[in-house]
Amino acid sequence: MDVLAVASEMHPLVKTGGLADVVGALPGALAEHGVAMTTLLPGYPAVMRAVERPRALARYPDLFGGPARVVRAKMEGPRLLVLDAPHLFARDGGAYGDADGRDWPDNWRRFAALSAVAADIAGGAIKGFAPAAVHAHDWQAAMTLAYLRHGTERTQTLPAVLTIHNLAFQGRFDRSIFPALGLPVGAFAVDGVEYYGGVGFLKAGLQYADAITTVSPAYADEILTPTHGMGLDGLLAARRDRLHGILNGIDTGAWNPADDPLIGARYSARSLASRRRNRRIVEQRFALASDNSPIFCVVSRLTWQKGMDILADVVDDLVAFGGRLALIGTGDQALEGALLAAAARHPGRVGVTIGYDEALSHLLQAGADAILIPSRFEPCGLTQLYGLRYGCVPVVARTGGLGDTVIDANEAALSAEVATGLVFEAGRGDSLRAAIRRAIALHRQPESWATIQRAGMKADFSWGRSAARYADLYRSLTEGPPAE
Ligand code: ADP
Image 1: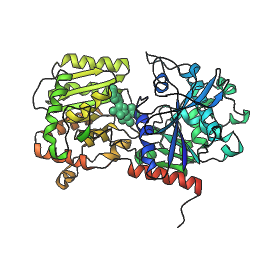
Image 2 (image 1 turned 135 degrees about the vertical axis):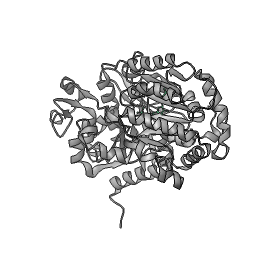
Image 3 (image 1 turned 30 degrees about the vertical axis):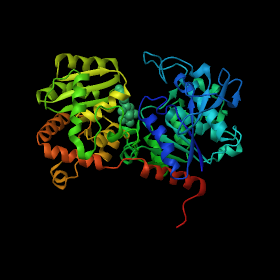
Image 4 (image 1 turned 90 degrees about the horizontal axis):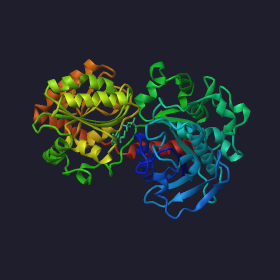
């Protein structure tokens, strides 16, 4: 079965977060379930560099204000189509904004264009390619569903899935953009793209999707509540029979401590002692004193969602309790400043690197003792899954996918030897503080700590099970439910 995926990021070409990891890993995992996935990506400079000998498969003389074409990227692994539209995507800076992090003012146009072309391809614009279903990711691709439903006879009934990776990002724009979207006037309606008087890209996708998925079972429940529904809980509740929580997997090839070129010493659950070498390298890279106290790491966007303000408030206690901290991240300037100030207050105990560095993120997972994830909400979260696989014990807030994937080291779990991490109440500094204290106490008992590490390393969060669920979902939409 051919499926067209539409997304704004894909590892390893362009990544700002977990979305890219998922979009990058899913095609390979789905191949084992008889699904051939082709992914359409925007032609950012980094993506265009991966396109060798581009051959135009479809041309648009005027796509939202400039010429564009769809080219096929020749690369190993996933089948990739690229929307080469220089007026929209050939820019320095990030996928969504300039080098200073300001959103591009024409993001609505950039991602409406991506979506319109996706619908066109789904409708048969590329000779010999007739996908049986379309799978759009997040608001940047969500308008694909609007263009499908207001498109040709073929596209109107083509099964379409929308995945929410984070409901906080909705793609809301002023109503004045509506005429430029090229949709029929009737689409500006409560059951169309209209959202609180403006245009809502994610909202439109949710409205038109045959199936909505999100990236963990707990988050699928949480987004039905006003607290986590971010204004869309009513719509989601009305469509709850189409909502599925499918846990993200991880790419166990790229994230394998026994075979990871980005770390100093490779190891497995049977050779945990080798992690010490990685620990030394972490100490050097983050200018930490060399001793036996536990190193907590953080690999994160530095935002309110990720609870980085809570962490900044707790750093002094983490140090006072005897821990060390190694952090890599980028994000809000105020949070970057607060964390850099903490590092300056605690030389040798707290090391902070502002930036994005894939290799360093692998090294931290391989060398730190624990990974701290104090998110206020977390649709799935991937860094706790990498932590589990690397014996870097996750200390996580109980929210969304974090609670779905980590077993707290309470007395019952410890005695049954099934604990894989520590879980605390989301959004609360006192609870994070207590968890850090608990982790440090457990770390002083090397046998207990190693048991937790090994239990985590045994847990299977590869894509196998989740890919099967996506494949079943596509099939149920294209063929109807399986026979009893
Ligand atoms: P989100 O998508 O909300 O940012 P996830 O935990 O789902 O959170 O995914 C984050 C991904 O980005 C992980 O692969 C993580 O390792 C990576 N990441 C986040 N910040 C950095 C950073 N500063 N350097 C390297 N990798 C990072």
